[in-house]
Length: 183
Image 1 (tube, rainbow, N blue to C red):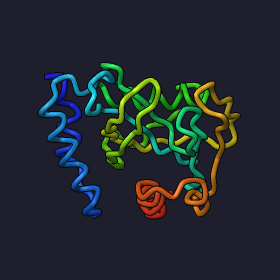
Image 2: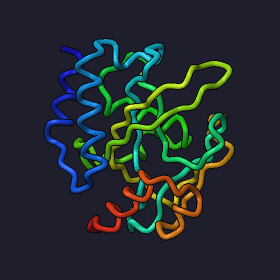
Image 3: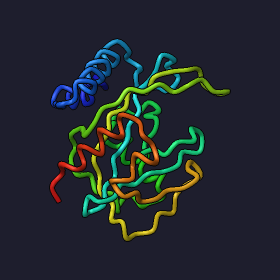
Image 4: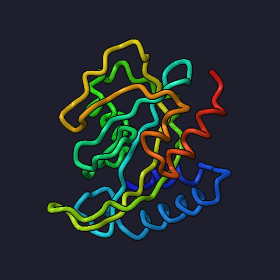
């Protein structure tokens, strides 16, 4: 069962946020209903993976200005058929930030956050849903951020300014969770 890893991660994940708990359940049902849930051609939606990148002091997070979406977001992207969702999240972080994978420290193999969000129709894709488990990682904020062609800009954003860049409810939740982290 190629979906088992993600289903087990979701089963272990607990959140105090009612809205997020509903998204966890929606994600679980979606995965069970769609054997090809990791395939980006699945039109109602598909599984993606993201990271919430903190610096060692937990005072800043890494955000990028996504070229296609025109939004400031955390690193992440499509699974493209890959079922090891933790690996997908780490690969996307390296690609989008330009930081060497060896410099990205996974702080836990457990899910840090789950979000389900709508991607609006574009010339390439119909409107669809992203079922997005997110993992907590750390990068030393003293190393350069080369970025990539997927983002206009990649930068460290002070935690208290994240919502000025993107005030989405899921980012509010991530900021709240980060404030509770121990250094």
